Image (cartoon, rainbow, N blue to C red):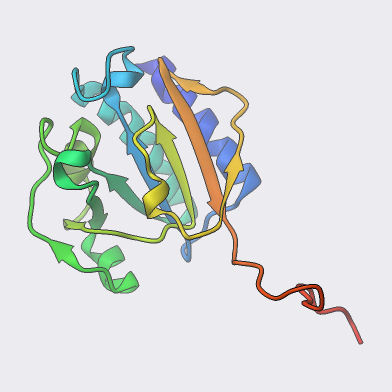
Amino acid sequence: MEQIHQETVAALQDLLDAFPLDEQKLLVVGVSTSEVLGERIGSYGSDRVAESIYEVFSEYRQRFGFMLAFQCCEHLNRALVVSRETATRLHLTEVAAVPVRHAGGAMASYAFRQLPDSILVESIAADAGIDIGSTLIGMHLKPVAVPVRPKKSYIGQAYVTMARTRPKLIGGSRAVYILENE
């Protein structure tokens, strides 16, 4: 568990180095604890792995103030666990379900029990994301996602994909994107 904890710290720090997160930003996290253990996604959920990974995100959330969302598995249509405070602040719509290991996933069910006043919401548009084990978080990122490459591509046995987002660049050849001093 210590190795998983340290690898999660390293991945999150790589993301923060590329894209600082603060109290205005929302981070979506998708985790297959089965994949972290080297098993097929959805086959071997682990509360111990979930706890180890959750501790890292919780500690960094407290330190930097960003909002967190944990994605459920496809059995709950990839709904997201957030705090009621986050849902209220971002005007998110609550949905009625409680994630459990076999319908939501070990990570989401663990986060649901740990986050203060947690609820499920159907969708979000996050500023950044970390996908541990190919859980497909892309549907919950803002429209223009930019890959962030971690120094180490695995947490346990699970492949890690990360992204930050940026505003859409609109316009054509005459468009200006940075205001220069006049």
